[in-house]
Length: 138
Image 1 (cartoon, rainbow, N blue to C red):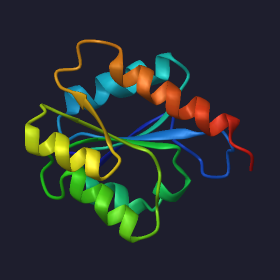
Image 2 (cartoon, rainbow, N blue to C red):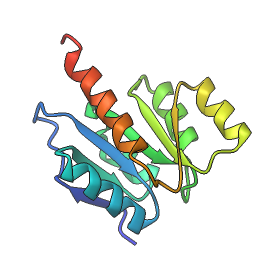
Image 3 (cartoon, one colour):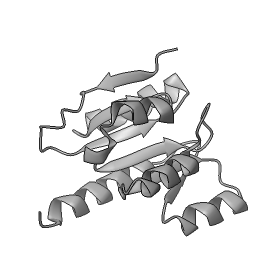
């Protein structure tokens, strides 16, 4: 299984924002990446949190979209790990919500979007984040 896939591979020298997507289910990862690309959103896609951390592109990303249930480090743990490293990018957790998961996500300031992804909720949330980032002064 590939550790990382590239969809419109992000170039950190390019000022255009990109979104990191992490899901260990290749079909879901490909579908989300395709949906974002079709909206003109650049994507850097990975099948694990560890693969994303190894490439060190996360410091330049506009947003993180991550599944909670990954092989290895899960989505909430990844967000906590990034914050401990001083990385405070907006994060969207995709998962089947439980009360405990909703509470943990809220405590971490992480948006939770319910799987299965049957609506435009994820795409709408990413657009809102990118719009806010575009309006932020440098």
